[in-house]
Image (cartoon, rainbow, N blue to C red; front, side, top):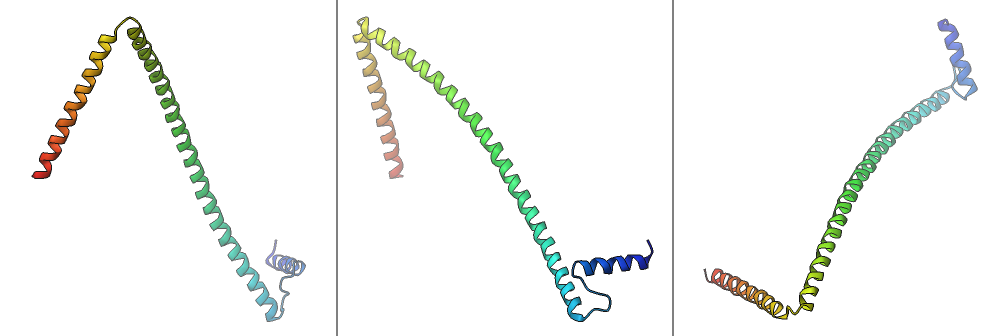
Length: 135
């Protein structure tokens, strides 16, 4: 297409969409300059929106990954709790059998041992903390 044909095409398009006319007034050129400025501002705003949308998408993906990791952690914790519950139930069953079989004397020994261990720990910890306060 020749340069002249391109120019007339440009003028025809501009007239069709309310653009300037060849040899138009300065107000027409001012309006076109305003439209160009508005279009440039729209492009800048669109680019900012694209950047924010991309950042938001990345945050959502990070949240998804973190949620999956925490769900795996909670599933593992649930499994550990189930195992612990089984061990505790088994131990309680054995203690019940011990009590039923006349093992009250052994239970008394066990209770005395536990109380003695706690008393020893208590005296050691209070004596140590009392010695630190004097220094």
